[in-house]
Image (cartoon, rainbow, N blue to C red; front, side, top):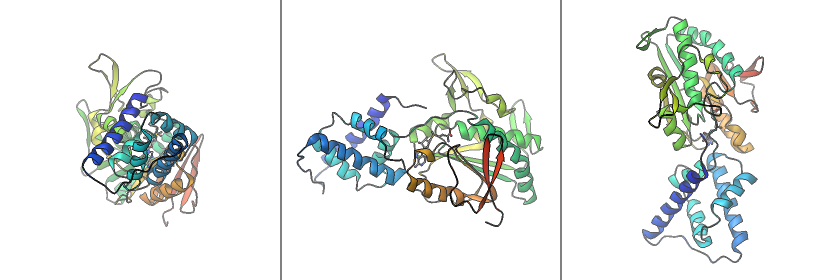
Length: 331
Ligand SMILES: C[S@@+](CC[C@H](N)C(=O)[O-])C[C@H]1O[C@@H](n2cnc3c(N)ncnc32)[C@H](O)[C@@H]1O
């Protein structure tokens, strides 16, 4: 989902309004200093904001991000901006004003069955994962799509998993939907730092067309449980996550840089096309969280340009055009 510049501006304006309201609530410790050279000072403040974003969300300080923020904040009164930046500096990553700012700097590009070779390779591991869950009598499959954006990745994983479960005889498909054979459970968690993206993910309604969530026509690879064709209120052709896909997936807010590790490990963790936006420091920190979230024998799936550093605990499995990492049983 791409943010329009209007959305971005609205987000920043909301954050600035919140700042003004906080100031209006009464005297605070913030000191508003006179500024000698407004233009230079503005650039310094933007850099300070971006450094704060890197510290709180991992996103690398970059020239395009600086230019974007400079453009967005060009008409903001410099004294007001100075005070806002000083106040933000005291706030934690989870504060709505930081989240609004981070929202305007994140890229939510995603689509169904993105990177088909890697996902098909993952799907080929599903029968063994299912057999393992039966052998260990957990009858539970847990997957994490970290940085899921608008949810297409999490629903893709759900469709592949349901297909494998029906093939294994652990789920029954009927006209009315899919029923898992008791006591089987599927838990697919989609998480993101962006509340806007998560709202769309929960709705599970996607445009169709050349640059849409279904852009590369690999949806047929999803198997027997694809998205349902429908017409939106405005008469547009859309596709929706079916109730079966929705039942398998839940979405939650999670900051890969700031939040504590998920309590329970996963059979597979997907974090694709997220770490490319991170600084080296943040990438290392996020990878540590992701690695530890994979149970022994489970899988880690990264984006095509991500490499697993300090990978002794994992073995790389290769297929044409794809790599996935399996955590060693004793690691
Ligand atoms: C390009 S999308 C990737 C979507 C999907 N994984 C895919 O490969 O199609 C990157 C996502 O990472 C999220 N993100 C960026 N920083 C994050 C952080 N610190 N914690 C969690 N998610 C983050 C963004 O909000 C964005 O939705």
